[in-house]
Length: 462
Image (cartoon, rainbow, N blue to C red):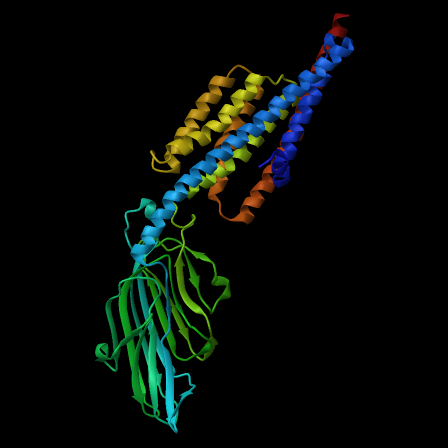
């Protein structure tokens, strides 16, 4: 990303960085020096000021580029390993399950021609699905693999006034997976000898007399990953529909699909640890074409136990720019000199935290350990480089800026709500503006009081 692209993409950051550079340039040009008595003295003074400002801006842009590079390399390497793990896990557990309902078609032969008799013949449904997360041994149990035991009971009635040759088709969830204890019964009779497997469906036939009812029960146990839904392939009137979904204890956050409540769509629900979550759907005389079920979803990006580290590293570059710009503006407001050593020291401090986190996260088991180590090293480096090297107030402000924008600011990456992030960003810039205004007023007040004391001292001496 070029400098101008960065300023356009992050106008607030670009503005504060340019403001610091412009104020620094004006301050350098306003310094009194005897070398400005000649034209060449003026030119040399201007060139030196421009070079110093270019060094300041170059350090800010360069260190920001280093932090972006650290994030990109970390994300690329870990996502490559992660993708392989996800594919392997998906092949083992079979991916998410979308179970379509039983399909029933009634045929009647008239003058050697077979015709379909359209009817909504499922008069009653009672479904039960129990999901329990599998212990895969992966870091932080980040793969939402589960085992499911399902039972679907249908009461099918031939509502036509003639006998029909009825075809039953039960769709099997797509993807390669093993179905254990698979059984289909009709009125308590095992239909295994009559079942025919066609593609991803199980079919069987029955000659049904007018008004005849058949109770079909399909049950199986299998494995899945991420989510499960029970879906209707096309709109129909549901009559006496009952479905129970049970999530065994220690479930992560998940999303529920509920056609009765639009507000539930996409809503994260946190299961209480140690308790089963039971959701029941009782529907009758409603027309619906929807899916019922859930999708496991952790508060972090699915599968990736290192995503919190990557997101933290992603916020570090902007934090560094704010740190450097605020420190330069604060130093200039306090009318203190800005040296190349101080700028280089601040840049090293701003980059150290991300380098330590990215380099040690795998060894220390994640973000917590690496962040603690990085924070300790940053604090020590800040004390070594700035203790008693600047005025006391500026030293305190330096430590405060480092704590806020090097150590705390990147952890915004752990917040996934974009609206909340925008609110934090707006509050932050408001606080920064108030701080700069307050520091300016305080400094002017101190200077004015100092002049008054000096004037009083002169009057007394006279």
